[in-house]
Length: 427
Ligand code: CTP
Image 1 (cartoon, rainbow, N blue to C red):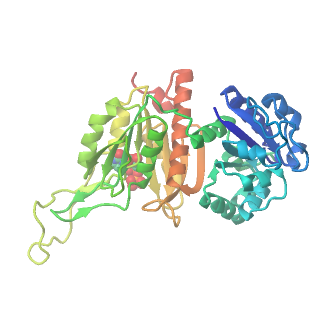
Image 2 (cartoon, helix red, strand yellow):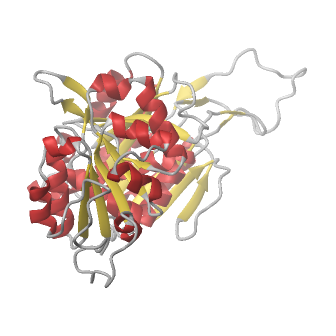
């Protein structure tokens, strides 16, 4: 089990850090806590000490009675020279809640208190879980600081949407829930196998619908999002099959890949694989239209070039699969929308296609979506919406899988799929 160093910044959400520590210790991890001086105005060190069974540090000038050791480890015979012994012994450093002020200091490399000094000295993975007012979160300074930290390999647990600390305020900025914080820690450490025993089917890439033997109707999907989902799911213990439509990316070991080209081939492969999967992640961009009568040979431009190409609708593969789903299956769709109304369209698709979740992105935003390494999405489920700010597709994939785990936990708890769609599913 891991040695988790928790850094607590000032903010109402500091109380959630207590619950995160309780969950982490219950899961068998040993936890030490460092606080910023401001955070003590919200939660006292005595509460963390009671749960961790170890002293809490706030100042780089006060000696550590445990000499940098984590609970369960023997303290060294000698006093460590550095006040940074604690972070030196940690497997992971989680800062939750991370205030806008501390994020700015981390991005700038400041080391003006014990928490920021420890972060600067950390050789272990660093995770930040921001919590703040929505205006502060959305401010370009905060977003730029987060981008800087991400570019340095810092993991970010995005805040959720909901009621904020100020009375009556609602928006993005709520600290992620304690269970999500622990999941992020375990994921970074690679100690979680929360998808072990599950068969995950991922569709990726974009279908190509032939016009003739050399031309096609297609789209700009690169398959990066689907491949990231597959790799993350496999890392978390799932048995993963990918149906790859025209993807030119490397294959990861341990994952089964099947190549398809057209929507019809993808539909056939899905029909074969879906009944034996527990989770379907339908990330492929399936062509909505295809030429009615593709030519078997190459159409010559001078001789027989048509004035127009007649198109027909392709069957909606996802909607068809969702009709046959069983109670044990979790079905996630994806939607690339352009501009205003993206969330409304996504909500409509969630209900119409009877999905557990739909992941929507606004492809009108520069730098995200098709054929880019980054994405910014909102995960829409019947009872909540989780916006994820711009991040590498691997991180977005991890958050989508967290949502799958959450939905399946709800299903296991109350015997439904966690969504009205699943509740209506065949058993
Ligand atoms: N999908 C599918 N079969 C299709 C079209 C789409 O299975 N023939 C799936 C995609 O893989 C994705 C979701 O449905 O998971 C997208 O829904 P869709 O309604 O097709 O979204 P858009 O193509 O964005 O639709 P629209 O043009 O209606 O906005």
